[in-house]
Image (cartoon, rainbow, N blue to C red; front, side, top):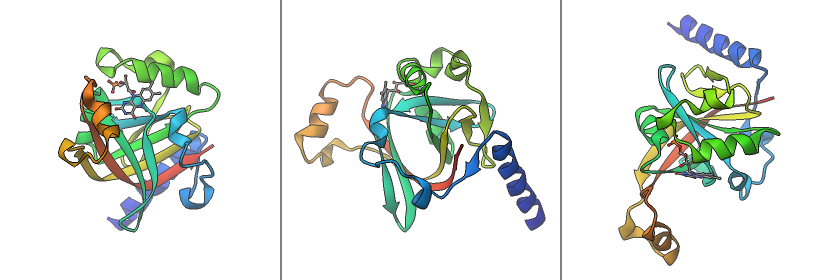
Length: 187
Ligand SMILES: Cc1cc2nc3c(=O)[nH]c(=O)nc-3n(C[C@H](O)[C@H](O)[C@H](O)COP(=O)(O)O)c2cc1C
């Protein structure tokens, strides 16, 4: 059993390496400014090898929670990606290189309900050892295991900022997904 698990882990590391990635430790090797990293938009993906989807995110947080390295994303009720996040234990957050604007624009304005966005963009899907989807064109892949997920409850809004956000927001309230960072790869 242990031997098969070790073999699976080695195979997975090789699979990532074959795709041109090397494993990193986000605590020491991630050098972006966490206060602005999400503002330039990143890609969020979830699902499994049978069905998966991705969308652009502009909101998120990185830090520490419950003694774990954590990454939080916020996904509105109507996003097609949400059902994949709710069904899977893992998700990935990805950054892209020079093609990022084109990818983020399309992934953030089209819905996977209407067709495979990755195929339309010419992106190639691969899967981590946990079966989490990512795109081989990414320059950074952070894989997270969801520790906590809950929609915002308006009764706990403490300022006009969230109240104003949802006053006229047909996509619905956001669900917060707090993930433990379990793997990260870069080129
Ligand atoms: C720059 C940008 C940032 C976005 N950030 C978020 C976000 O943080 N959370 C969210 O729920 N939607 C966000 N969106 C909207 C979704 O990406 C968009 O509705 C997308 O089409 C959903 O795709 P899906 O239906 O395939 O899941 C953002 C869109 C853009 C263009």
